[in-house]
Length: 329
Image 1 (cartoon, rainbow, N blue to C red):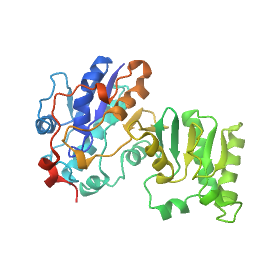
Image 2 (image 1 turned 120 degrees about the vertical axis):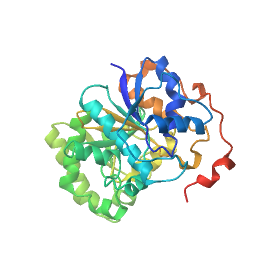
Image 3 (image 1 turned 90 degrees about the horizontal axis):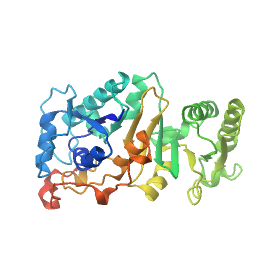
């Protein structure tokens, strides 16, 4: 089955543009996307881009009942609720087995907060829906980065680097993904340099690696890797201890292609690896490579090799000056 729920993301960002732009390629690949949102907002977004919604662009109503007017580049509570309802509907379809998986376009966490939504993003909500399960892994085929902690203040992320929870995380990651030969980054400069620059490596991280390998019955994990050189010639699989430690180098190397996969769930969920792009919303210049890679992950590379340069898009890019008043402050 190549029917997929596509949660359209924040309507004030680049999600609608990406979905409209990539739609002809997905049709060529034999994929049937079900775009979750509301028909009125999708039509409004297409008009802002200077075009119309294709007749084959199937919109499934999310259940959103609010009054939403697209305001490009702005984080609004209405936009947050719109994207939240779309995602919930997509997950519902996946749980029922009506789609092969859920592809999510970017939401804005500030908009979710303004909309009264307590979750910090898609992955946080998925853990709530599926009993605490779900591991965030981001990357490309050449390099996948699993995050031990995600959207936390750095001080709190550092405090969570403890042997027992890290060991449990490593075991769960191996069981959920089947990954082998995974490098684990250190926390401190030079990975602590034998305790001179910090003792977390000696007291917490190395024991967690050894304990996980012992319980798994094989040498899945190795390290600790020195963080500032680990990405020069990185292993194909890496565990980062906090958000920017892993994602800053990953996105510097592969920004346009990165995807975000949630492992350990009874459904398949994958997302683009970028944000809402408020600064370029509705200008017709958003790239689609990460979005296409989401479908390649779901169904395999045999779908095709089309990229941004080959996407068909009937809408003309908007001059920046026309939308400057909507830029995020």
